[in-house]
Each structure stands twice: as C-alpha cells, then as structure tokens.
Length: 230
Ligand code: OAD
Image 1 (tube, rainbow, N blue to C red):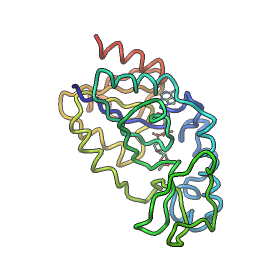
Image 2: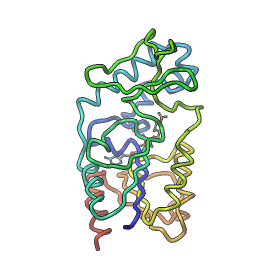
Image 3: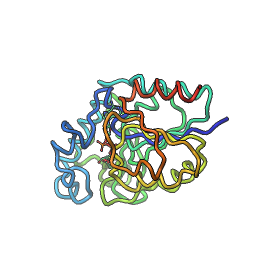
Image 4: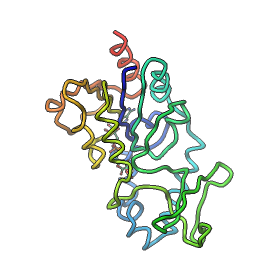
C-alpha cells in the first residue's frame, strides 16, 4: 500500500470552529504566548495557564470533525495514512484516523511536573485541572502540551515516518514553528508534496516542489482526492 504522510496544523480544525494561532482572529492575538505557552509562564501564574487549557479542553466537546478530517480518514481504505499533527485537539482520532502522532501534545491528557511523571487522560465529565491537583506521587499536574522552549519528544519518530512517505501532504499550517516545519526537509526526492491552505504560506515552494491547493481544508481535500485517484 502507498504510504501517505500528512503534516497538519491549526487550519485543519479551523472549519470545525477551533481558532488558529496566527490569523487575524488567532489565539496569539488574544493571549501572550510567553504567559500561557511557556514553562516560565506556568511557574509565574499556574492558575492562568491551567484555565487557558481548561477552557480549550472544554471547547473540544462543542466541536466536531469537519469534512477535511473525514475525507482524510476515508483515505485509509486505499492508502496507508500516517498523520503527524501539531494540533492538540482530538478531531483526527474522532473522524476515524488510526495513526496519529501528536507533536505538540494533547489537550485531553495531563501529566505531573515531575520529569518521569505519569500521563493521565481526562474526560468530558472531568475536563479541568487546577492548582493543587496532583499525581499519585504528589506532584502538581500540568497540561500534556509541548510549550515553547521545551523539547519535542516525538520529533525523531516523525522524521522516520516522513522519510517513508510516497506522498506528503501539508494541511493548514503556517510552517512558522520548528522543528515541525523542518520535517519538509526529510521528504525523499521525487515524492510529491501537496499543500492545502487558503492563504499564502511563507516557505520555499519551489525548493520543496510544493503543489499548493489554495483552498480551505474541506474543498481542498476534495480536489486532492481527485488528483490522487486520477
Ligand atoms: P497557524 O495559526 O500558525 O497557521 C494556521 C494555518 O492554517 C495558516 O497558514 C492558515 O492560512 C491556515 N488555514 C486557515 N484556515 C484554513 C482552512 N479552512 N483550511 C486550511 N488551512 C487553513 O497554526 P500552526 O501552523 O498549526 O504550538 O501553528 C503551529 C504551532 O504554533 C501550534 O501547534 C502551536 C502554535 O503556537 C504550540 O502551542 C506549542
């Protein structure tokens, strides 16, 4: 089976009603990244940071996978599809995609601040953590999110997956954040790279030989499926 590898970003979930980070209505226009997405920010004001992620976690129960997620999941009937996502939502999984690697963590999981800390899965009936909530060893719980300045533990696994791609698809990411954006460098020569994004993305399109489908994810996925099955 042909191996499709997908790198997705916030634009993947935009049509589900999940805000992107850098657009005009983006999250980083409303919140200070240093305050809510760094370890220093968490140490300074943990309640603010926990609340930011509690709110986003609860939003997950108000949204559903869009047609883009669903069309991507349906590709698994004909292809071996591996998704590498920068998204911390669970919409790929909820649309039926089986192989999803989360580079930047997952909203539904929390872990203790202890380095070897256990990972705990939250649920719809128990979606919040607060200062004072601890793991079984007594360490404070924190979101299972890769914050700026922290290492990306899954990056090596992601690189190995990208190297195996027969088709590489980039969906809804501004490619501003590394090391995720650098994954493009590991696509083998000659492998087609498709990008679905309604806006211009600042990357070296010619160097990477990217075919840009300049549409939102649902319409873009329909067009891409037409190309893949031609
Ligand atoms: P960005 O907000 O930087 O980029 C979102 C991209 O989605 C942009 O290129 C938009 O043009 C595109 N987009 C918007 N609507 C779309 C639609 N309907 N269909 C397809 N694409 C659409 O988000 P990311 O690139 O995911 O990290 O950001 C990368 C990382 O930066 C995130 O994982 C997050 C953030 O800070 C952490 O929080 C650690």
